[in-house]
Image (cartoon, rainbow, N blue to C red; front, top):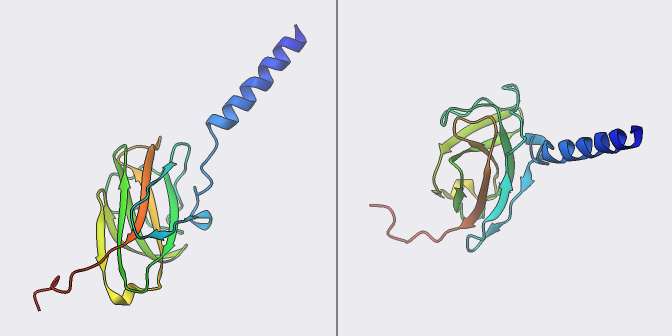
Length: 157
């Protein structure tokens, strides 16, 4: 009887630690590096089991009814400063932040793809924070960052 209960206890421990494990990019300091591609090749991620950063590391997002469950990504903008961020799946919201962990400026808080075209952004490192709308339980999503071509006649001038 002792062997069965010990074995059962071990199985429960292994299962719960696997199911409840936090994502590796749960904290800003452990942000997953994304490669900026020429085409969107979305990669699958999860925020299930994640926790929120203290506001001393990153202020709460300004959209999406944030419930303290997020994951982090980082990328370097192409030299052109022209790029697109796409996050899809399960009512996810995201923020684009400049600066470093503990000293961020939130540039965007969004739920759909967003284009950026500003030569001054070229070569800058950014952080993306992904979270599920009004949910502390997280969700699954796909993310990609691509360099875009901006037409010469994009601006009125």
